[in-house]
Length: 251
Image (cartoon, rainbow, N blue to C red; front, side):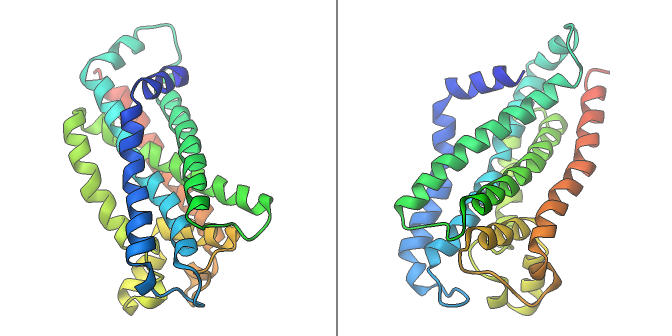
């Protein structure tokens, strides 16, 4: 099932280009057009501050592809056909999750190259950088299960694509992807600091050695812990709901 989903990705390269275009646009617009006017704690380079946030933002918007793919399978009756075959009932969902993590790894590799081209660097060792990538992929795995649940709950690919952006954009805006929480109003900064995206972004910046590290809140001081805790909690909550929805789909 993982191979089947990766084959669909290979047959639709325009979909990958579409999902890459948004984060690359954000890098160019915020990094070069608005970057000179953006403040970074410690007077660091804004593009180095921005890139870890773009990595995480790409993982968030990737759940749209997950949800659309699952919804397309459900709307065409593919799920019913797979359920009648001699295969594990969990294979459809775990295969989708595995394929999306592989796809996310390829996306990360491409974005790292783009980041290096615009001046982003990791300042710590390769080991810390790999841990940062691992935390980003862990978040992507959690978001994959959110996309699976959404695709099963709304088995219409067109509807799913309309739903994802209005949900994802506020979550991105109310995080530390573009602006450090310390530079926001106090109430907004508190929301941003506890945003699951902010935890992964802050932990990645710390491991990469990029600017924007720190803060006075408990969430900011324990970003690494939350970068593991939020995705694990999300998987524990959403994955059983997705499995239950899948089991009830054909009843």
